[in-house]
Length: 271
Image (cartoon, rainbow, N blue to C red; front, side):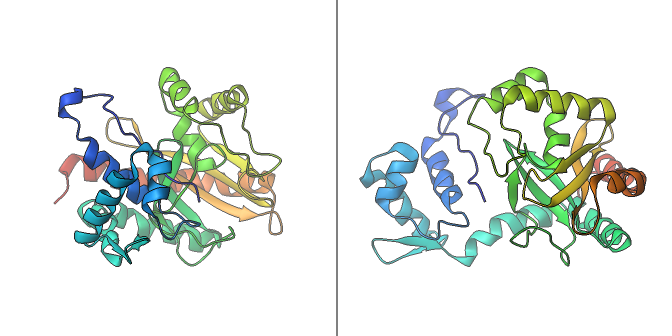
């Protein structure tokens, strides 16, 4: 897993209205990922760019608030951190409603299906079938993956205005996960042009060797892109051509059903 991008300076509000302490505290929490199970003041200082003393104060504050536990030198997450994500999904009951439809679709295909939204250059899963997986690790709601090499991500990136897409891609190099991963911005933009034209995306061996997937957009009440829906498989079970010919029409029909749920939710608002 890749860490989430962090921002430590104001971009859309006045600098005087931006709390850098809060930004740094959240940035510390985002440093935890699959291969980082604990942090030290020195590691935080190096990653975020602050003094070791300031990093230690923030770590101790997060410990005092119950989000971290520590032994004085190392700090690690506590289960309390789950409240942040759980509260989001509890408030936004939309994805809970969508998840049932995603599970039905996965059962019909007998393949993993998911819905994701865009966060920078990552996708975040907001609904998915929890019984099937094709990647090395089983993904769950709230997990993130790189957008540029996933079918879900290509749908979401293709919906961005060109200047916003350019600025986003310029923030960091695109990670090469396999030999087929597109890492050249020009090549990615060409691929996204095809996605805009066809209104669906495909990926073959870009995220992991052997994995294939197709995705379609999910639009809201005003026609704007809200999320993306996909079905994934492995080349040991089928190929991308058969996925497109046999699964894509059903995926598009399922997307229409889910869009009804999304639009109804948007029009009535959360309860």
